[in-house]
Length: 185
Image (tube, rainbow, N blue to C red; front, side, top):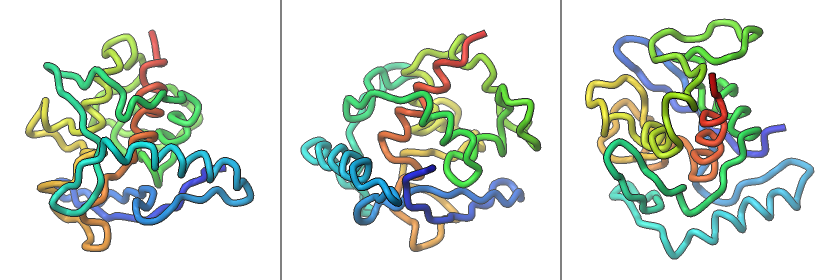
């Protein structure tokens, strides 16, 4: 059971209509039928408050340092959970990675070929490199089609009600990093 509220965002990428969904950054998160998990999630989000920066769009974003082609430190010092990361990667409403990338799931139909295969990603990239690509691939490849999952500035074709909110929160970024780093050849 995914324990996050979701909102849908339509993005037009090079004439291809792609639909993304991401947790609401407004208000608290809830887990239907699991108040303890809701409390842990909200407590975890609140503990970042001292490190938050506010974007021009009003979103609270954690500070991070780019070193070369990576962000070496986890966002907010959060540990990632590979199992949750796998769920985000496979969820066609959350990470929606399958729209562009191939993953090691033969049972999943309609896997993308626009982006590089993520099979063995952990053998090719370290956690910091994966993290920067999720945060904002355009810092490495300015011509990328990959949407930034933790950037809110200078985006196009974003519905007004979703403007200023990152596609994934820091915990989700770290969970996806943990999952992709676990994919070894």
